[in-house]
Image: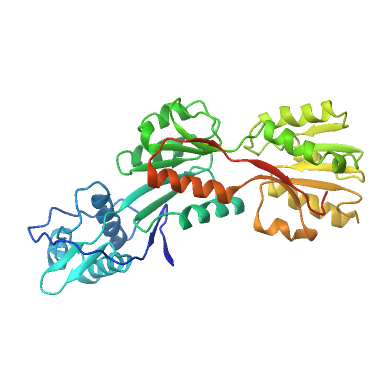
Length: 358
């Protein structure tokens, strides 16, 4: 079982484990804590984070003594309840151990990993859950989001430099991304989901948005031919890779499928005989609304192929056809990079899963 503790800008995920035997170092603690008054984190959470970081950097090692509760209270002007709360949480996680009449000691090494996603959507929850489930019990994760904002992207990465053993980052298509990520040693960096702006020599675990889309559509060619027109709705608000447009249009041209790429979401007006390729769940909701309003039967009068598998798409309207990579496999492979440290360049397969909507 694992415990998840949510923090305002990040959260740490630690798994409860049995502590191995170790030798205690009863010398004066090497650890000193200072409250950051500018932080949004509660003080006890700052203390937890600071201890985890010290262990991750080997400033504290297994068997080292931590400051006593009284010492931290005196040095940092914290209440005893605050320090006890932090130590109790670390003890529950198995990170520290208390020894009667001696104090608190580091019980196990902690590896801290920086995980930087674009946004948190349903399919990324699958990736994230698989990643966590595949990690050993000594890994702590700090999760951040950049929301495609280059200034936030730069600020958060700059603040993270030197604090983590591994950096897992979802890049995006902006000219400043390579310069920003170059601050991270290549051996510690893994670019995931999309390999855009990945520096030479950087590890990647990603999906292909071009040829894999083409091949997926070919696998559903007979069902696609049921419809009079195939429309790719690529709204202005999406950050989906633009190379997908090229391969969609190539597929339709190669197989003589009447088609259109629609960029203006406001002009979306579903008509009988149309098949849509949708890259946004927001547009999928609008599509289903118009089906209902116009009494169009999904999979007969109109069709839809949605990008990215989510648990709910298996059940909505008896099943939404999807083109998707395997996010569960991606999560497992990311965990392998964290635990082994071996360089990797892997493309996770993408496939068409046919359901009643096609």
